[in-house]
Image 1 (tube, rainbow, N blue to C red):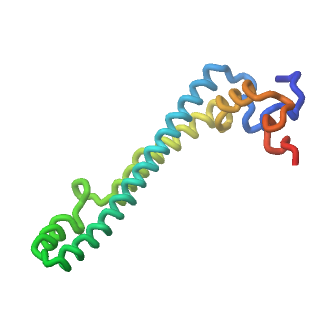
Image 2: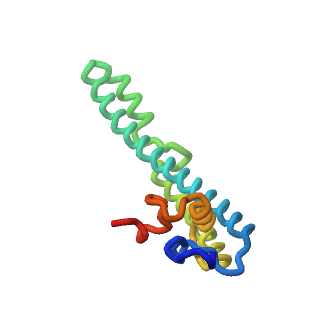
Image 3: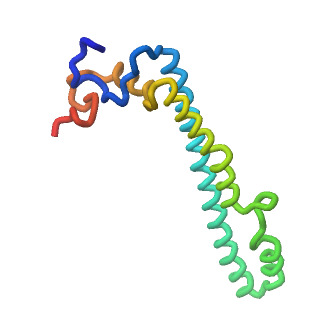
Length: 152
C-alpha cells in the first residue's frame, strides 16, 4: 500500500500492522465473526427474556378475562401454576441472561480482545477493512476510504 495515496488508504486503526501475515488477519476475522454470532445469540436471549415477560403480562390479562367470564377456577389453576414459575430450574429469564453474560459472553469478548491486542495491537475488523480496500473503486464518490474523505 506504500504507493497508494494516503486519502485512498483505510484509517490507521484499520491498517494491518507491519509484519502481520494474511493468515493471522484471516484467523482474527473468523474469531471476530464468531464473536458477532455470539452477540446475536445474546440479543436473541434478551428477546427471549422480554418476550417471556410480555407473555406473563398477557397471561395476567387472560386471567382477568377468564374471571370476568365466570371461570375463576380455571384462572386460579393457571395462576397457581404459571404466575411466578421458573422458566428453567431455579431461574427466571433475568437470571439466565445474567449467567450467560457473566460466564460466556463476557469471557468470549475478553478473550477475543486479548487475541487482537496480542496479535495486531488491538485493531478491529482488519479482514473487513481489507475487503473494503479491495472492493471499492478508489476516487469514486461513495467509495471513499474513510468518512473524512467524503465530499461535504
